[in-house]
Length: 109
Image (cartoon, rainbow, N blue to C red; front, side, top):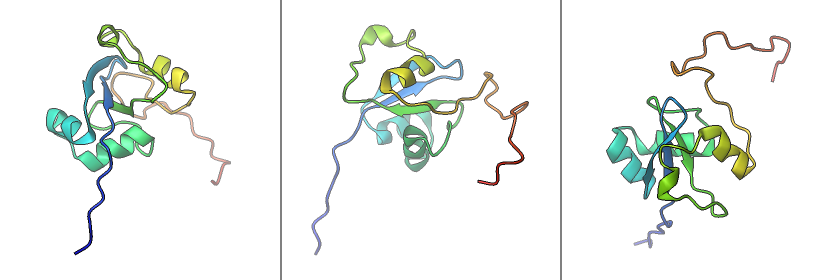
């Protein structure tokens, strides 16, 4: 029988629709239990394949950045992305939909 290889769980930051940090979960599975969403979709939202999932934004905690309890309720999603050095799309409004988004129709990529 093949030996199973388990990865060390990564902590997950959960931001609400106002783009404010509301929760730090110890793993994707814990975030799924808390939010009622599927772990696979949460993982995709953490790495950037999905913008959000179920009215929440998810990010893995970067190993170079320290998150403190005082950051809950005050840390904004765009601030965290800047600290990580990544630029990811986020919805412009709290409705978290794509209304009034501008698309480049000439771009075939």
